[in-house]
Length: 128
Image (cartoon, rainbow, N blue to C red; front, side, top):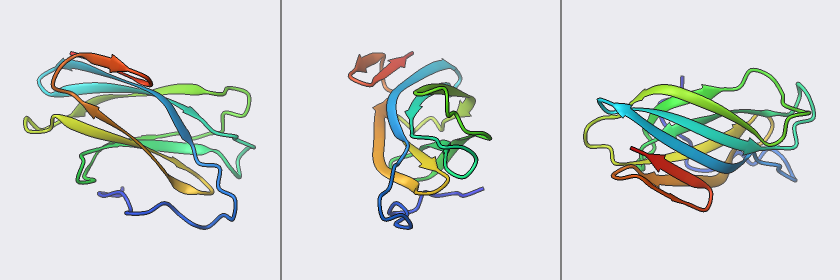
């Protein structure tokens, strides 16, 4: 498992179709444990090209949790998947979500959430 996110997205494709993060919900369940629900949109074409996961990381790119997607979602777009039991250190009050797809790698888009209090906005919700 990768401990840190790469600094830049993959440049393997001439016309990348990155997995887009359309919504993130972070739910606190006590004792610095969180569940993250992430909605992705990606033009999955089948087993050769699909959104294959996303990470929860600290702002300095230390990965706290990874949700691996094991199959394409050709007929289900956008789609939401959850990652439970993500334990954050007591000093972590902000996380970054970054998506990945099989062909183009990490996209340039990230979603940064402040976890200090319940809040919501365009594309995110934090529930404490």
